[in-house]
Length: 91
Image: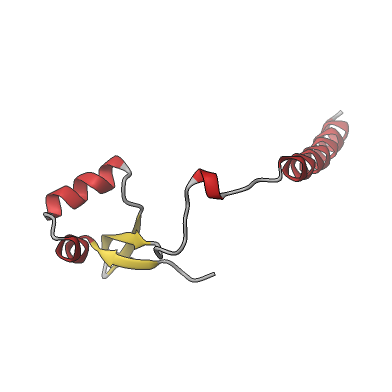
């Protein structure tokens, strides 16, 4: 899996021929995924570019619900036994 490409707000605006203000509005509305990194003591916001070949729509993602349920149930049982042991120690 490739790491996502990051681009500054200014470069994104220039690349897509839109104003910086509109890019900021899109990031605030959640239309563009962002990452905040600290550089030289300042927080800098970058836009995460995803490759066009990778689709992230809900339709393309298949979830094996039975497998996920079993994994969650197993984790629940482990946590439940740990919790019960903690209660026994306190009594």
